[in-house]
Length: 375
Figure 1 (tube, one colour):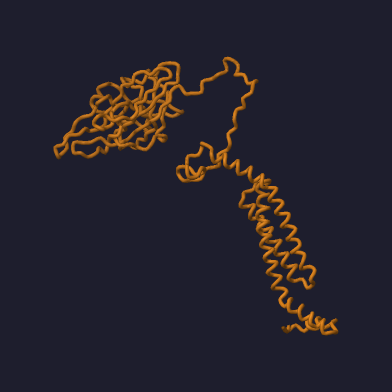
Figure 2 (cartoon, rainbow, N blue to C red):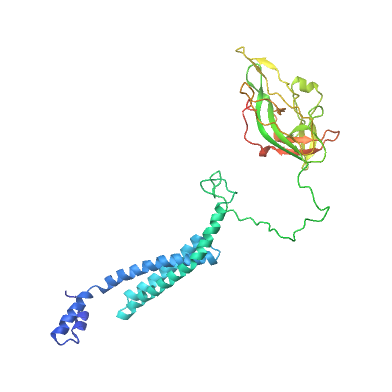
């Protein structure tokens, strides 16, 4: 093989004076015909190995001992590895003497050995981190059986922390007498089922001025006194509504004749209208144009009077022999639908001359509406 570089050819003819030396030079020239290409491939292989080792080692070290995200650790590791590789290739490829070519290879071997030793040393730390992650994954806080860190709505939630436990020790006395405080509100109320619809007119259409709100609550008495939940005049159960001005209440006939009325109450520093429920079974039969009969609205089915301390008023949903929901524990309120009234919540108030709000189930905490015949 002949080189076009005359300087290299002159270098190769200086020194040998016999046939054996000439033959040896030819072999040397043949084996070193493309020194930069062959060495570049070797260096590239070593360099890629270094990149992988750097990424593993530096990422693990940074993530373990410095509070940075794993992605940042990997990016820093890849940058360090790339810089090292480029410096090594620059020094090696542009070097004209043989001895510097061995420096990156030797350095690579040393770093490879150190990287392996470092990885082996970090295995216990990685195992410890994996064990902690497993404990987090088994936390009962999560709700998805597919992925413990995906909520029911499909959005990622923060990794649950391990809650501190209470150690059991012999020197752990209870607090001094008289320091215990009650931590429950006197009255708790929530809405289990509800719906809202306009009352029906004789034409079969819904009224554009009056609607009804049907609710089934659950109420607990945490106080030390009996809780009055009667809806006889004046009713303890009220629908709180927000409306500026004189409130228009247009109840059905039996409710209007019972004598109860809408009153103003103050709750959380604001004034609201408190609407009493319709009296039980106050609905009228109407005949539609096709001759069929129906009711013009919902009916209240409420028989609660007092619940004792620690007691509750709750009517679970159950079906009758006809397969329909039993109407019990329901309250129906008549509200105007053409005034821009907004529902604030369902309240329990005291039955006196100056009624006080005892508890409120805020409307934004209510569940989705149910079908009017399902409860």
